Amino acid sequence: GNSVTQMEGPVTLSEEAFLTINCTYTATGYPSLFWYVQYPGEGLQLLLKATKADDKGSNKGFEATYRKETTSFHLEKGSVQVSDSAVYFCACYVAGNNRKLIWGLGTSLAVNP
Amino acid sequence: EPEVTQTPSHQVTQMGQEVILRCVPISNHLYFYWYRQILGQKVEFLVSFYNNEISEKSEIFDDQFSVERPDGSNFTLKIRSTKLEDSAMYFCASSGQGAFYEQYFGPGTRLTVT
Image 1 (tube, each protein chain N blue to C red):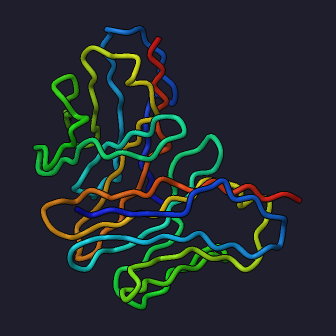
Image 2: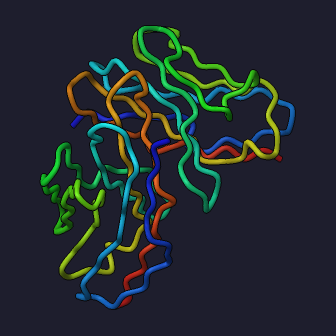
């Protein structure tokens, strides 16, 4: 079946450090891939997305490239800020009758000043 | 920017009671969803809804759960007889049509069953 695996947290970084959160997927066909962010006490917000191979999604300094050859969609940011502290979820959607999102477990990020 | 809204933000109920969680999806969206997130765990799909009927439901969505779109704007999740393990954050989402797909989430309702 379809699944998403992302690196376990928590991840703790100092401000201005480089961030990578790994995400790999298993899916039939050509899934669309997403990163959602959940700030403390808030709901899920779409951070970025990519809908086909080699697409790069970007937003707020975060980037992720859809790599079909490695079935990956790793999240990166060159210089994190304290305000980036949140839980990050990788998710995929496979077109068809099944319209649900398949979620990773989430990776908690804490950025220290 | 249009957004999905949910009410209440926090609901406390006693075990065995019925609860209704309410959502107002984005107005021109056609697909509606409920997900839940038990504290500290992953987000889990509950149910999807399209054209006034359930498209898919997970094994979590048993006979105690039901969904309804009572009018043109609201989308509700009812739990008939709550259990302690129903305590979670419940997220509503909606999406439009299109070749690719993006779900917009509400802020969630935190349900606490005591």
